[in-house]
Image (cartoon, rainbow, N blue to C red; front, side, top):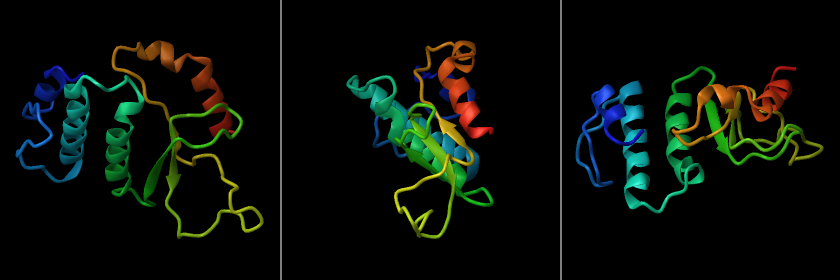
Length: 143
């Protein structure tokens, strides 16, 4: 994914350093460009692991996009198990700062806008979609 092919596909200049000075564009292209730069910076170190090292970049991309939605959607990385395993994160409708349940401030709901599952780019999408993991998330979120 970070070999320049995706960058060339979306017209993003290839930047090998986090200090790249190419200006960001507003809107979806800018969000994607910022994500690709952050992911490329992790990849360029050679020290990252296939999923968790990219969580900050994925979270920022989803925050940027979620801020443009109505109602706003906020990604939360590393949410707790709500009965279907532990997804890498969830997409929640943004609410005023108050406990979801006054009887139990730690009570949560399932992510209203979906679960986040981060996978390395070499994983086969059809196998991921057909996996038990995804089926469990769908059962929890679509019931």
